[in-house]
Amino acid sequence: QVQLVESGGGLVQAGGSLRLSCAASGRTFSGYAMSWFRQHPGKEREFVAAIWWSVGSTYYEDSVKGRFTISRDNAKNTVYLQMNSLKPEDAAVYYCAAKNTIAAFTIPRLYNYWGQGTQVTVSS
Image 1 (spheres, rainbow, N blue to C red):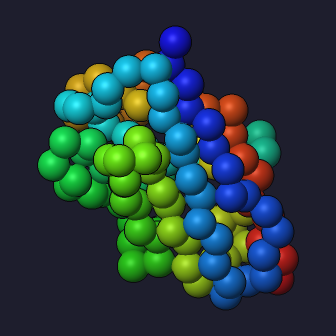
Image 2: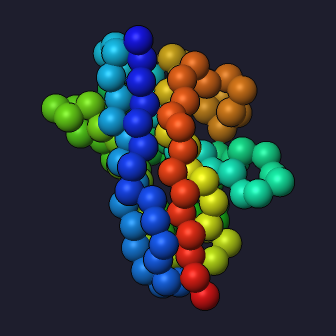
């Protein structure tokens, strides 16, 4: 049974940093795209960042480029999202997701597995 378990969310002041973790279990994720999405209240889930598990290539949504960094630790089977210079508009529920191909990685409905989400709150 595949599980993705996020942690690391919380309350931070604008300009601060948080690191989200996604512990993955239940299968090997070689060849998978591992991504972070976020969802603002009343809005659709939106792509934030992705990493190809096998080769480590990374991709980012334009508004987080230069501020967020996605990475993975193969030994721990964990994906991270380091978020720096946080803005009030970054506040959302953040979800970890896994997709068994790397095509169309920004489309939420194509993902195979999802975590439960972790809340990020940014105070101004």
